[in-house]
Amino acid sequence: MFCPVLELFSIEPEEVEFALEGLAYFMLHIAKTNAVTQEAFESIYETTGLKPAFAPGLFQVITVQLPQIRDLLTSENNRGNLSFKDLDWRLNFVTATRQKQKMLQPKYTCKLDLE
Image 1 (cartoon, rainbow, N blue to C red):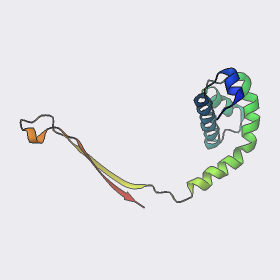
Image 2: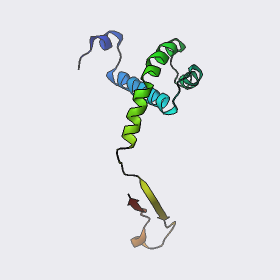
Image 3: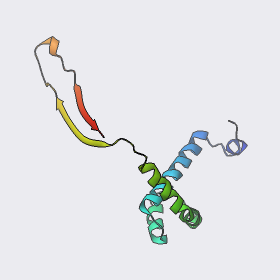
Image 4: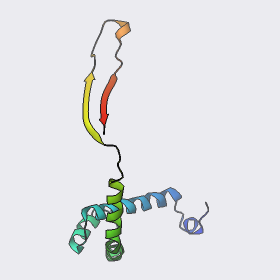
């Protein structure tokens, strides 16, 4: 896809994709923590590395949509996805052997019980 703006600033499409993905994760984190106060928002915003000048605008845009984002997250969590009930695991390995037939070949066994 050709985008003249990206061509003008010589920005790779992958960079834009990573930036939008990072912004989405930031918005989800704000929604998960329910950071509706300016102080809570700023404490999370400081960890992003974004310019401080963008904080007031993002705060206004994101906090208005927090109830809808939280409702979306709640509905996604209640969809009935599979989750772990019990997880048993074991790791067996041989550190040395004189027999060629029993050369070190790790095996992983995992027993899953899903509800």
